[in-house]
Image (cartoon, helix red, strand yellow):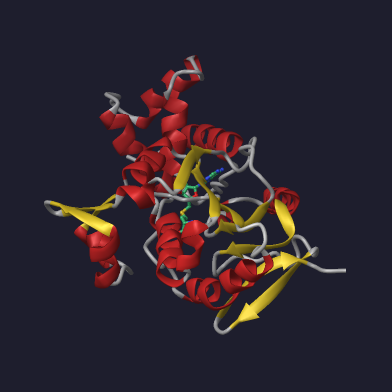
Length: 274
Ligand SMILES: C[S@@+](CC[C@H](N)C(=O)[O-])C[C@H]1O[C@@H](n2cnc3c(N)ncnc32)[C@H](O)[C@@H]1O
């Protein structure tokens, strides 16, 4: 059947305005494959009917649902592995040394999806830096999607999801088995304050940050929005704090006040010194 140009234009404009996610012409197949099941689930005969309903009353909850449906939530434990080697071998040892007097770390994971990334970081800290257990760790993780945040808070993963990247020893140590699913143990879930945040809107009130994880989300935004977000990250980071982006993302040609710190096969960014 296909999605009409008018409906595609309406949805892509809405998604851009509400989330900054860019859906260029050519992405009709993607919109159709994500919105058709939503329309059906919500009792509409077609995407066209859903769009009509949204046009009549843009404040009904369907707009947020359409935006959620258009987010890509692909993630996994220890995704891309190399950044976590950088965190283990360079970033955390450096931050622990620099903050040894205050014994406080402020961490933000800005696109947490279903929680695998923030929990990977929590596991990495527990496994490698036991001294941090006596530190004050302010750890916020956020996402634009309510559905994803519910998943983060529940910390429940299927066998398939835990098999993707999580070593069996860590699964047994940090998760509880419930039938065919695995739930992150409560003490670890309590480490993280999960909040709804639209990166293109107002950010949560946060202390100045030592570490920002913002991986695999800038790719969905246009150049101007990437620049705006990197500018805001700069304001929220401590002068000697660190930023991690996804493997396909960079600050290069977007914000030259960041410099890349290479470590083995990966690296991270910090504000250029001097
Ligand atoms: C591909 S996932 C990346 C998850 C994780 N950071 C990783 O690298 O595995 C992208 C996430 O960004 C979120 N997202 C998209 N647009 C956003 C926005 N404007 N504000 C906050 N989160 C957004 C999506 O909901 C999705 O969960």
